[in-house]
Amino acid sequence: MTKLGSEPINTLFWKYSIPAIIASTSTSLYNVIDRIFIGQGVGPYAISGLSLTLPLMNIAVALSTLIGIGASSMISIRLGEKKGDLAIRTLGNATLLFLILGGSFSIISLIFIEKILILFGASELTLPYAKDFMVIILWGNIFGNLFYGLYNMMRSSGYPTKAMTGMILSVLANLILAPLFIFVFKWGIKGAAFATVIAQILGLTFFFIHFLNTKNVVHYTATCFKLSKGIITKIFSIGLSPFVVHFCAFFVIAVVNLQLKKYGGDFAIGAAGIINSIAGLIIMIIFGFAQGMQPLVGYNFGAKQHQRMWDAYKLSVIWATIIAGIAWAFALIYPQWISKAFTNDSELIAQTANGIRLYFLVFPVIGFQLVTSHFFLSIGLAKISIMLSLFRQVIVLLPFLFILPPIWEVDGVWLSEPFASTFSMVLAMWIMYRWYAKQEWKTVKL
Image 1: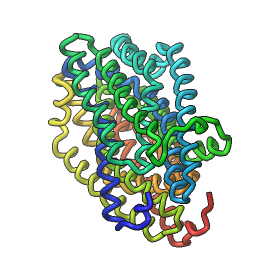
Image 2: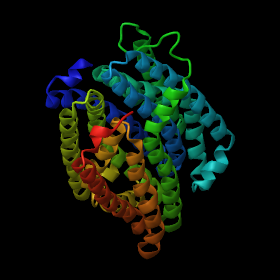
Image 3: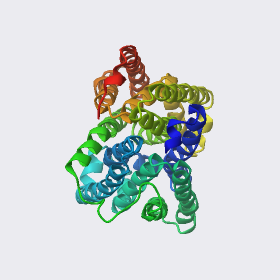
Image 4: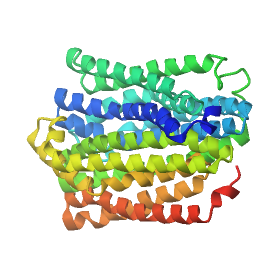
């Protein structure tokens, strides 16, 4: 970890970003793989059913990021401060929190699963698919939460390549099991769910073996699981921003599905699921740059090497914007080709292609916004990151979802996203400019 304070920033940035990009992109491949196999092997209504599970899955992800991002940020900061004992205790506390919160969420959701899915817009044609998939995912939710959480903590404790290996192992397992269960065993959408859970358990086993090794800098000990109010408070305070992002996404996706059902029907919901999986894949690449930046920013902030901190941030913004720009061009030029990878149904292809064109209109601005929000998380300033998240998801996006559809119908739903991204970009630039110009980072204390 001491290399984070001495090696050239450009070298460290790519050392941490490339594994993070591969690993974070791998996570989004779960959604893409499931939709391609389900669309081609089960049918268009199954894709729509899968899309209806997104709000509930966002709550699960929200709980996972509340703990995982908060803990991984604190591990980086504590290691930068030469407080390895606190980093180890953070690992233990976070692991217990995953078990408690993840288990509670699964039990409550399983009890009310049908009512929840109907509330999210399920119809008689899509409810069976959504329920079959989500019940299996919820039974494996604890494994999924721990899997993603330990991945983040392994990366932040100085093992980005090893963390990437565990993630790739899981994705490869899913890539093999999903078509086997869907096409060979004829398990349909249940096969996709079983493949996801089993793949996550395999990756989780890999991560557990790492943290059980006492030779590693951060590892499990007999006393690290003793819950500490101070550690839990710090984990939650930093993890609150990504939690808010995903929890708000729960409401937003639920509203999107209801508006799409009203103005476009079941296939419009299916199109949204496809578009979200595509956009999610690109955003995860951008998120990989932000994750690669996190240990550099967190460590050098803790070590008071502020110029190195800023150099890492600037590199992340530049490359995130480049990737978003490439994705924007590709989406606008080849929307039909992208849509056909997921389904052979002509109506679903048409709705998806139209949605892609509108959804991606101002996509390049996503890079700066996401990296800036993650920067503040990396140095423990969750309040600023929360404000950026709330502004985009609640103050801007939700109102547009009610204002634009009555004017442009289903096109209005798709256009709500670029409208929200534009306004959020302006706010993020203004906040960062003021914060940088006043040199407020020099007075921040954790």
